[in-house]
Length: 164
Ligand SMILES: CC(C)(COP(=O)(O)OP(=O)(O)OC[C@H]1O[C@@H](n2cnc3c(N)ncnc32)[C@H](O)[C@@H]1OP(=O)(O)O)[C@@H](O)C(=O)NCCC(=O)NCCS
View (spheres, protein in one colour):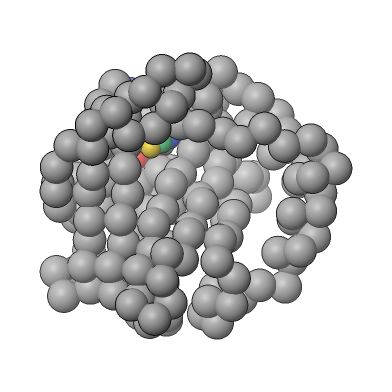
């Protein structure tokens, strides 16, 4: 899995619209090791890296990042990346729907946030298809490849979630 992650994280397509923190192979190994036993339902960690697998092909196709912003207030933030050779096959939509379902049914999370660059229509579409509501524009939000980029800000609250 480390080789796979190193390869995915280095893809220019994965880096075009999101800031991927530089991590050496060793740092990545230590990070994965520290996360090995973390069960999502316990929400014991502040951040998770979840691998997206196609169970029919038994193949990893991408990853989801999950940040627990506040356990007390039930706030989380998600991000997602699909390896370029698997784009436009519905993987991101299916994976985001699955994590949303798990968070709202198995954990105390009540509100999920997500942001996407204004130059990333695919990511925006994923959020729309998963039932997220557009909140507004975060101007000059993140630095991506040396430039401050405006981001669309989306939210999904448990009360508005209908399990689709
Ligand atoms: C954004 C990303 C995760 C989408 O993954 P994916 O598995 O291809 O998405 P899906 O197949 O679930 O498609 C979701 C929707 O986006 C649309 N879409 C996909 N690529 C698109 C593109 N380049 N432009 C416009 N719409 C696009 C699909 O057509 C689909 O909408 P539809 O059903 O109405 O036709 C993927 O492109 C990716 O990993 N990009 C690099 C990393 C990244 O930008 N992550 C998000 C950071 S916020």
